[in-house]
Image (tube, rainbow, N blue to C red):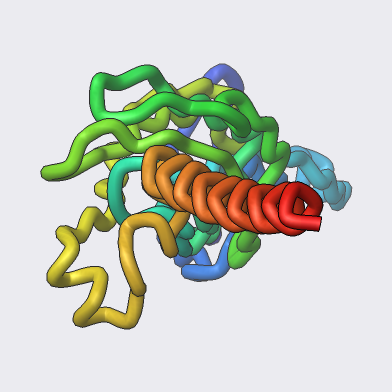
Length: 215
């Protein structure tokens, strides 16, 4: 841009159009500006000054259910997938699974993920005891900072898959017990096995005593 003559004490505003690349990282950028000019004696000068421009892209954080081992009432592991699909770095990600009437968290209540660069992907595991036979929704509090260290806190609701006995059979799960869900089922089988063993041991013992008596 050619300004022309600039009198002492005067100023002029210059406007530029700048295009930012869609893949540009969210941060401040320095812009070098070269100024060349002459004084009244036609002496030439050249200076380089630096301006700055802030490029900001709002962080995009994805948190979804990756897998689960329990599909009915009972204890089992779950895996969450956390990703950064945006162009802005996400700093200091923290995950907290909040309390609910639907479930009880046994392991993995608080987890620290750290920084997530664009296209980063991680998985987190935890153990939950599902109480609700109709539905269960994990309430997860996510805390993180953007590239300018502004902290954000939000609640993400993640529905767990809950199936009834018919669906468990239809989808290839044997029973609620097979998916780790029924403590009482295990207890019943154990007691039944113990009772059968006791019956045969007692019967065998009586036969031996009867033979000794007859002898």
